[in-house]
Image (cartoon, rainbow, N blue to C red; front, top):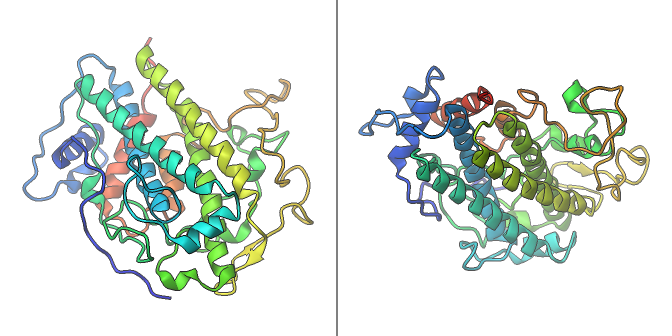
Length: 375
């Protein structure tokens, strides 16, 4: 199959913040993390504005979350261009009929769900950046890193991207995690993969070119990959917000995290339900197999597609009664900012990005994880 070549274009989303502002911000929050190397020739190395009214830990958390939401907005924009609803709220692209039809095999309303998720993530980063500015802090701008190639399939824009949806390695252990009645990753517990093959290879979640529109089982496998990737992304946000909220000092910032975080949970609930509708099949082009999760050896409580509510499980201490919770949420645990950035990187989402990008992301994540509530 054809592999699209890299293209560098302007982002479809125009932000008020300048390219220079992100670089200054990255330097300010990433001192000691080697961020100086991300400053291109001709850009100022002066540190960004520092807030006199927000604790430094709160600033670090908000900056990382703004960056994370920009990343999410980028990937959902790509999904929407090919399989969502293109309108004044989520502009760009003009849809791919074959890809959209396969998405609708999972649920006829998939295009609307994709559109709304894309719209939500864009609203999150725009709000977080606007709030940072209102408190005297430079907003986050990742535009310098929009250098990854677009899909060349019909319907996609040919612009530079932050994320790569064409070589994904998707962790599907979240499926069993939310169905377990006696395990919690905050205790170091691990969980089996719902789709073992997805965690081992590199697979597209969008058609790379029109060659990917056939054969039929190959295109459906691409859509199935997308369905599990949707839920993987949103379960991360579901845990990230309550985890970082524990390090917040300012009550207004806490309110922001407690108000945005549950929308990520609503997204996750939707997508894990739709992933359960992915038809069992084997991709004839690469051997990727999606098992029947309701048949041996995958049947039972850990895999049943109908069990989409969080199963009560252990929390805080194993001696306590099981309780239905978001997991993980332990501060500085597996889903802190560094954990989230690591998981996204391991998934192949940033495959092809520059060392400067990873330096910037790691600096923002480390600063957010270092935040602690001030007494």
